[in-house]
Length: 235
Ligand code: ATP
Image (cartoon, rainbow, N blue to C red):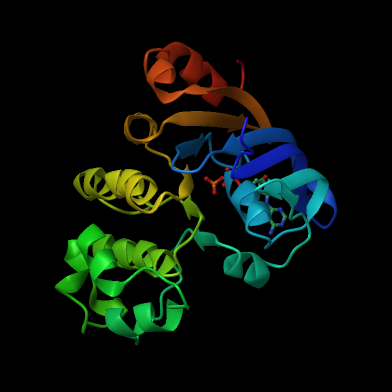
């Protein structure tokens, strides 16, 4: 069996040495879209931050292509193909879309026209400053900026935060195209469970820092009661 792109093994992760995520195991394959779900405070952002190297791995292991990357700094992991789209987007409001993309471009990166084909909305606002874009356009820019570094693994935290459902319906399927068109693995955190399960191949559900449910998105879509109870923490 080929090695998974990302493999998290019995991970303990948290802050100042105290784990808030415990004994978490998950994996993401190349070209696969995986949702990380769960109620507020379940540990989803902590998990993404740890995989991206922003937080230390307290226990267990994080492996990229079979190689242990626990403890490797975020900027080094970015060079190795892990790209994080953080909650809140982290844009520079005074810089234009074009400037954001230029700053993020690296050698061997996705060609600009290829990116604009994936995110056509961005081509209409290349010379506008991030601060005047709509919420949906800002989120598209945050994803676009992550994509110009041609990631192997794209981590996306709450893309839909503060956006109208109609915008979310447009944004989430982009993750499928990222996986299909550039072959990246995608791990995304999403509060809109039904939409997430339409886009994802598989999903993991965290509650109180522990994995309570996992499975193929198609199976989980048909098991709403089980999902609901795992959100309430009594699965
Ligand atoms: P949300 O949807 O609210 O962002 P989440 O599932 O992403 O939830 P996390 O943000 O990972 O959850 O938080 C998990 C736990 O870690 C929570 O109990 C939270 O209070 C705690 N926590 C988050 N950030 C810190 C921090 N910087 N220092 C200490 N504890 C933190």
